[in-house]
Image (cartoon, rainbow, N blue to C red; front, side, top):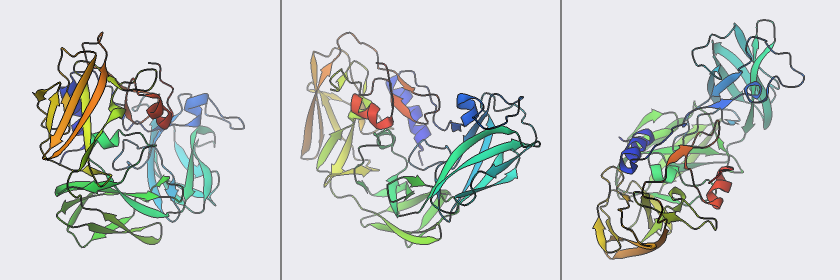
Amino acid sequence: MRTLHGLLASLVLLLGAPLVLSAGCGAVGDRARTGCPAGEICNPDTENGLRFYGASLGGSFENSPSPVAIGGHQAIHFEDAVSSTAILPQHHVVSSDASHVTADSTAQRSASLRGIAAGTADVRVLDASERLIDRITVSAAQIARVQVVASEDLVLALAPVDSPAPVVFADGTTQVSLALLSETGVRLVDDEMRITSATPINTPAWDTVEAAFGTADVTFTVEAGGGTFEAVAVHAGAIDDFELATWLLPADAMDAPFVGAGDLVCVVPRSGGARIFGSTQALDFRVDGAAVLADESLPSCIGLPGGLGATTSIVVSFGSVTRTFVLNVDPDRTTPAPLLAVGFDMPTIVPRALGARARLAWGLDVER
């Protein structure tokens, strides 16, 4: 089964372009970010502060400590913010407000968090003299619903967070993740949750299952946060449209996508307005009338050839379904636009020249 990180490797090979991976880099604490917080007495030998890691969330690159489900649990660990091998002084972990989130040391560099009631608390790492090494704020919220999300699709994983679309699942064995969501759509953690289904499943990660999708919907029962929820993975109908993955493309000052030779161009098959996850159907691509083969590992993507004009016409077809996308071309660029991670502790891979809408969605301030 391919993973997102495996697909990232395929992306690098297809692009032939540099990629800096900051996925899974956790989150730095208050002291590492801004120095000793006001009102705290800090250990003078731990000026670097700490980097904190929580539960990895399936279908994303996030592994910072996430909000904890009320009635749920999250194991976290931490290390020196600059050097993962640096030795930390003897320490223990406490919560600033155990009425919202409790925090208990489980071993050196690790702790156990539990959500008690809606609100926030500082998870504080203290030395033997009760001086602060670093801290991070964690919240707790009630689970309102559980949603099935695609956990292996690189193109969908990179889609801006402000443009959710329903996802349906194609035939075949694949991995999906069960996202615990608050009333406001915030993703929560209960890494002790239990997932069952009448369909045979494997559980490779706390929130992720591997199942064989056939011709019917698959229903999952999730026990988390002291409650029981159902989530349905909807079986995909026939492909009836394609969506251009504009979030992978550079954009001009008007937020219109443009391309250059070697750029990665991807589409997302759709059915009934929903994005299809797990489709292995062979798509036909033509660029300015010439056939271009899709990548074996990324069957919905192509690398653009050279010799493009001021605009390029990309036609994608499957059976009788055809869509044409016309894009402006940057004539001065003959190599792919590089991809790199943006932000000191942003755990997501994003194109360097994202359009304004996508940058706003990710909360980024990116110089083009």
